[in-house]
Image (cartoon, rainbow, N blue to C red):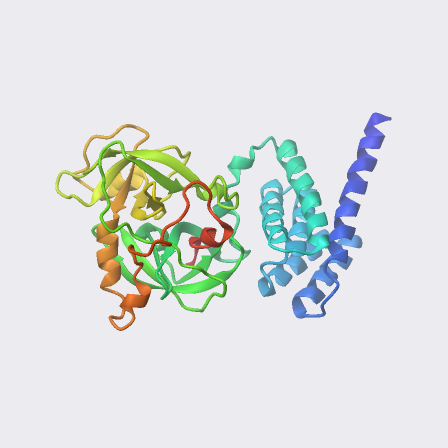
Length: 357
C-alpha cells in the first residue's frame, strides 16, 4: 500500500509541475511560445524525446525561458538524465528569480522542490553543480571561464586560458542576459586576456575601481569572488589574506594568497577591504604551469596579478578622448564595492565566459 501511494504521489507531483509551468507561458504568441506549447502537447501525449527536442528549439530562440528549462528538467529526470535535469532546474530557478510575476514565484517554489528531490535521488550535493557549469545553453556553446567588467566602454578582464581555441566568445551575466564579445588583446607573459562587449547591454552599472595606491603587505586581508555563490549576494565574496608580496623570483607583479575558497577561478577579481580592485586571481595549477620562477608555496595557495599592471594595460587600450570617462576613478568616493554585502547591480559586473569552438 505504501508503494502504491508513493507512485501516485510521484505521478501527481510531475503533473502539477507541468500544468503550473504551462499556464505561466500562454500569454504571448511568439515563435518561442508556440514551440513551448508544442513541446507541452507532445509531453502530454507521452512523446518525451520529441518534446525534449521541441523545448530545446524554443530555448534557441529564448534562452531565458524559465518555463522551458523547468519542463526540460522534468522530462530529463523522467528519462534518467539526472545531471541534465538538475542543470535545467537550476536555470529555471535563476530565471524565475529574475521575474516579478506571481506565477514565477509559484513555479520557483515548485522547481526548488524538484531540485531537492533530484539531488536526493541522485545522491548529490548542490555544490556539485556550480553556477558556471550549467549556464551555457544547449548546442556548441560551452562554459569556459569567468571574468569581470571594468570601465564604461565594456572592457572585461579574464584569464587567457578561458578563451583558448575559441572561434566565438559570449558573455553571460548572472541575471541571464548574454552578449557577444571580442578579444581585444592577449598578454602572453602573464596569461591575461582583455575582451570587449560587442553589443550594448542595458542596465549595467560600473562600480568596480582600481585601488590608486594598493598595498600588498603580507597578512593583509583580501576578498575574492565565489562564482559558485554569485546569486547569493550576501555570500558572494570569500575572505583571504596575502601570503607573499612577490610570488615570483624574477617579477614583482604576482602575489601569493590564501583564499577560503573550494576552487579559485582563473580570471576572477581580487579586492581589498575597501572594495577596490587589487588583482586578478589565478589558481595554483595555472601559476605552476605558467611561471618558471614561482617561489615555494603551500598546497592551498593561490595567486593574483597585481592591479597596477592591469590598470596600465587597460589604459593603453582606451581611446584617449574617452579615457577620463572610462578609466575607473579612484578619487571618486562612490567607487568600489561593499565587501560585506554585494548588491544585485554589482553582481552583474562579474561574468561567465562561454566559447564556441
